[in-house]
Length: 281
Ligand code: PAF
Image 1 (cartoon, rainbow, N blue to C red):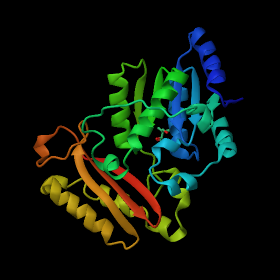
Image 2 (spheres, protein in one colour; image 1 turned 180 degrees about the horizontal axis):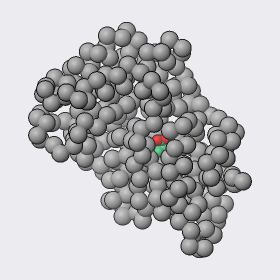
Image 3 (cartoon, rainbow, N blue to C red; image 1 turned 45 degrees about the horizontal axis):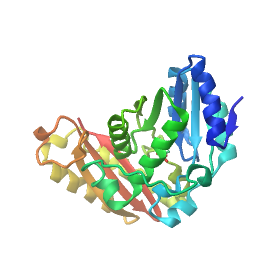
Image 4 (cartoon, rainbow, N blue to C red; image 1 turned 120 degrees about the vertical axis):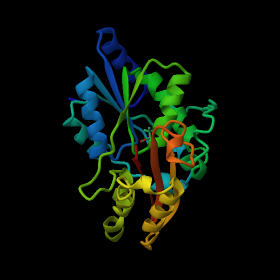
């Protein structure tokens, strides 16, 4: 049976009891509208911890687009039903007033990490993510917290924050979960029209198509190839295609400049903004 809490006080009390009994706590923060990708994070957390908490909170301060916030799917009841099958023990679903009784003015310095890609196109987004994740980690006090690699830059920023603040939690990255046609699972996929859904796997096809032979070209050549392939489809409007160092998230000129490289892409298909990435090496 899953317990549902809405306040910080109740949540802390439940978690503290578990910790006092020597239990390890696994935590999966989400904004709800759960799909198989989330459920796999939860199942991994259940395997690796004694007590698993999932938070469901559509965090208003990480949206830089009011329309995106308004349209974000809110499906608490069906989310709880889905979680019932995973072994998750507690769902924390606070209101915005509970999380932000007054504006949170915490400041972070992520150096260059948040100046590129999502950070460039969604000003203020990572500040909002960092504020809420810090707050959630302080409330839930997990041993391990699980984040999907689809949000590659978010993961890098959270790791940086946890490191800088020396928070006693292990951040566990989890592989992207894809639909059979390659589309990365996302709560936003539910907003695609039938025609858009049919074309959406173009993103993954463009990324995976270069995985084998990328080294035949320079990084910028690969970037152009991927852009060209996506743009052949009229439904897409690309925001960025960037090839960056997996650690620093900075672009580079030659494959030998970095130890590991990832291609990250963000594009609108109709009104829905999708992101995806593939680690090349
Ligand atoms: O990845 C998400 O769903 C959100 O950014 C997160 C980590 C739950 C913070 O609101």
